[in-house]
Image (cartoon, rainbow, N blue to C red; front, side):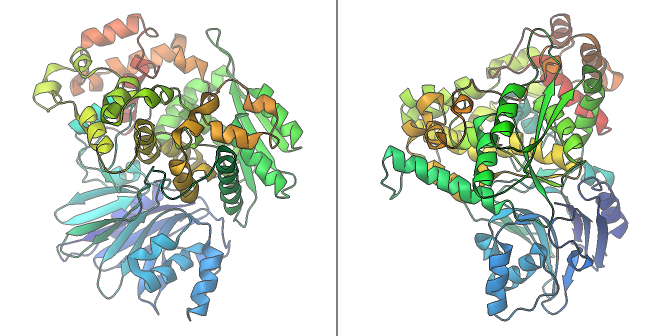
Length: 595
């Protein structure tokens, strides 16, 4: 829920309330139900509200607790806020609202930065201490809720989206060379703290940052999953039941709301299980939503046959949304406008259009996102089972990194390689460092740790957050319940890899959802018109990469671009993305941001 923004100055000057107001206004789609600004000397805070818990004005933000000397802005949901509220009441705290935002304030007062250890949920927050002047920023364990930062010697600004930071000005919008390398090499993911822009960073997941009035800060990483066996000694059947029980609890937790909660139903095993477990728990009249597209180039654009089956089996109130081709091209630009960072997946357009329709009916949805990363559902995991731990990083790079490093010389203008340091393989160095960290017993464990804590955060999770919040819809992801992630990380890799991937989940699903859903081929959100560029879509790409601003930017070699435009659908990245679309998407995003 919501969007947050703020500024703290380090030179004794008052915070720029106009700048914070501008950033807050730019977040209006994340919080269409209200807004507020707090200004207090060196700090100003802004908030856009999406009403989900405690719909009264008592829960409005920025929330000031004069008795405790704390002011906070908060984005997300603390699913166990009722239990924490009871505990805090017993400890003597008095409440003026029924919101999870106030629970955050009281929890911070009682436990300090360790409050995050008590939270079950997704969140990004800022807490201002009146007496010390410190500003404390925090982000949830899996980075489900975003927090972008722009710092200069005289001040720090933060916001829920990168474009909101840009609206206030004074941001270095030069391309960050290492960020560019990651975008072109690491499946278009730019790991934190970097972004594609030199002047913007993002707070890493599972991190609390304490910002002092002199401008220095310290970070506390408060969670890191081990991906090792630990003390659990379960047989295969016990593992399946343990995973199902953890998912059941995660789904139940994410029903906490004072508004109706729907489900994004793709017809795959993951979202189907969410529906099944809610129905099992007594939820009646569940609202479910599926999206599909017209076929293109002989490729089907929908999986309605599966979502229809699940909806009928559990008697949901189901809405099937077929997107006509004439809606797609305008939606591409709209989805790019909603992106905090350039995201190459064509799923963005699907989620954007789906969210538009969903917003007419519900404010909160649950999604099956994340199961493939947490439970080994992708096809690059099984080959790693035959790889020794010391060769894991190299083997992972072969199947995941978009293109061999040497190929960047074909793609980028020469000065970006030599003058900007892209003659170094930054993405491979990042993979090597991550794989060499302690823990993660096997090559599969190391890959899953990488994908769960890095790739998942800055690809599918960010995609869902950006596209749903563009329509004032909050998406909740039970497969990213941190207790479920910890359990899945401890599960033996061979049980997850079984049955073509997610074996432990498939075994647990027998008798819970129809076998036809469990045994179906793996699906995805297909948008054929983007996967196979032609006609008006190819024209849009050509316009972007040949625009004067693109030529002036001088990122990509003209001969490579002309070759791609002449044959736009042959060259693919390692994971099958359209190579021309990857480059064009970056250029379209930069142009949309006025960079």
